[in-house]
Amino acid sequence: MDFTHVTDRIGMLRFPVGQAYAVRLPAGGWALVDTGLPGYADEILAALDGDVRDIVLTHAHFDHTGSAAALAAATGARVLAGAADAPVVRGTAPGPEPVLQDWEIPVFEAVHANLPLPHTAPPCPVDVELVDGDTLDWGEEVRVVHVPGHTPGSIALHLPSSGVLFTGDTIANVQQLMPGVFNVDHEQVLASFRRQAELDVETACFGHGDPIVGGAGAALREVALGLS
Image 1 (tube, rainbow, N blue to C red):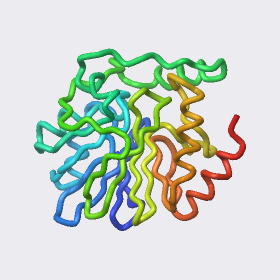
Image 2: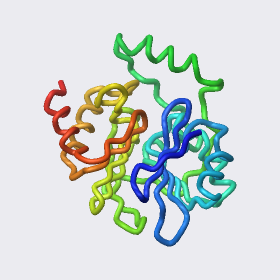
Image 3: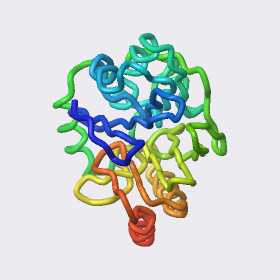
Image 4: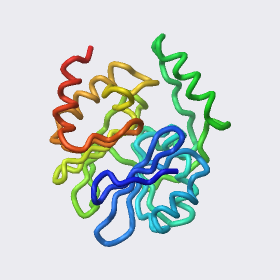
């Protein structure tokens, strides 16, 4: 697992598929945005000196929630997730299957063929169910933005004062900046992309693909204009 700096306060943890982000808290310790695949808790803890205070899950897919239960058990960190995805994270409800477009089918099959079985995450308690407009305090205000479409409870996190946006999988930057793939509702994902493009953003951190540091809002708006 690779740990690199995005900004002076934000680090990126890269996994065989996808990535998570760690935000340094002013009082010490870290807040995690997603936790990657199952089995990486020890490596994450080593990268973050074992000090994780908050774990925010942008959605319930196992490549983002996989190590959440182990990290919460090891650190006592608070776990937060979108209200509509929280039952899936807890393991009390199944996650909806994506509605794949024709071109997505071979990509989906290839990605999953290279991931270890089972394609599920251990159930994880959720301490706080997040809804649109909720705020967190990570030394600056963090605004929760409900961005459904990839999953019903997908959320983004917007830090207005520093111009940072964590998009989860509603937006990707793999080869090109684009709406995320493997969605439950394609039209909702397009609407969620447009909503995030309207935010004041300089740095965008995606669930898949390299972050954009500087000018991210302009890049998002340019893509949003061409969505159909």
